[in-house]
Image (tube, rainbow over all chains, first blue to last red; front, side):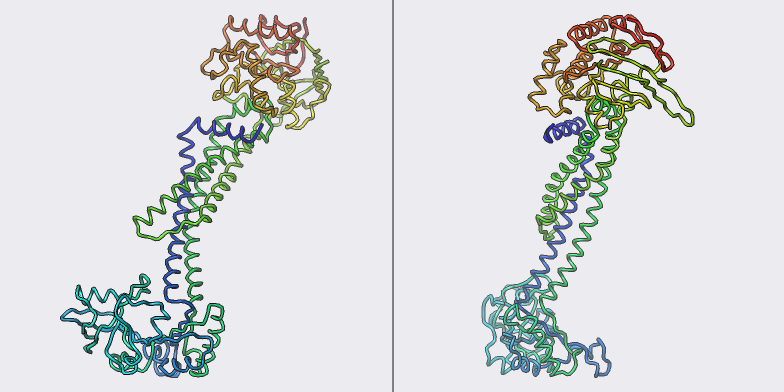
Length: 401
Length: 224
């Protein structure tokens, strides 16, 4: 008796009660479908965040000011935080660091923009010439600041796309004059949009760092320093070197933080992996419940077919023959449910992406995992009913009405 | 001797009480014999039948089938003996309702591990023997009682067993159909098959060469 024939017998038994078989597999179908959809949502979120972080630029180290314990009202308050890093530190790093390709500081504060009666509030960021290349921002049209404009703290600005629509509504902004916090500026360039959500560059105005420090905010500090390592492999060395240089300069390791892009990526990936695991875990409960459904129906089926089992045993079926027959039936149920569930999951995550606007990523791993979990569930919950069938006494089974 | 039962006893424990279904019986059946077992209900004839059919084991005593002691075999070994040595015919036919006549007849060969072409060939021959070759695609619920019992007989024959065990084979049939079925058994006997039949109907028992009467778990009398 070949396995294929056992399979055919099982298929025959299942198709003799199609509605019941379908309802039984529904649990597995929904379970597998849910696992695939949930995991695809989780992985989609992960991919989106990762691409957002990667969009910051390549091989980036981000230096931000930490806590200055020597100041009054220290801690994380406004005074204790932020006003630590200055142009001197930037120059010190530019001169001292051997592992870095470029260093680009920024001073970022919010500012009020005004153009012919239109107002908008946005972030104004003072930067140097190295900034755009490091962040991999390109100009859509116009130009960036030149060295002379930087040195003389000229009132020129490069603006993002949102500012173009919000402030200049329909007018070509190039060469237009507008006001930031009351100071007159001229638009010399517009950025190509890059990144999405929190990390985008569209709702920002970029001015030379010196202009921001002297003419707009009256500050000698920078809020963040971006440093670009020479290549990916020396990032750990670059972190060490930066720490050493800054410690030497500032005298306190608490006064600065160096974050590495890879570190941020790892943290975020870990978080989304947990999130994905959680979603998948909740969905697999559905799969487990589906398995219990299979066990339930197989138990009913064994009772209903007691006489059939008796006949088969009388004609020479061994316990293993009966065990195999019922086990294959429940496996077949979960397999068919798994296949339909995978299809449902693919369609479902497509719908989630289309209708819900979520980004979803379908991975082969998720499909294989859900499918094999379904098979294991079918196997596990099929064992008890199958053993019950196999251990029936043939005389009792034949007498069963 | 094809079958030898020696001092075979079967004891059931119901609560703390012991119920003796068989109290030590001796039976010997030769190859090619047609034997009927008779007795009132509770006389032990069904228990004896179950033991002879290797569906049950005796509590004590020996059962030698075709030269082999079978009373102490494992469940799987008994399944094999049932598959190869014994053909069952039941009172209520016991056909699988979702399988065609042909598939029902193939079933013992299925568990013997024969290829599907071999199974089909043998099953068709067995159905031909009982005159149902043209009905082999029919399902049990599409057939009369007499036809169903003939399918069951074909199924009992198909594996070429040493012994055909028939348990009240005409019990669910009208008397005319019963006669037809008994004529088939008579033919089988004439062609050399060994048949053992349990019945409580004297007219049916007359087809047998020898009648063993059971009462209270013992053999009361034998007549031929």
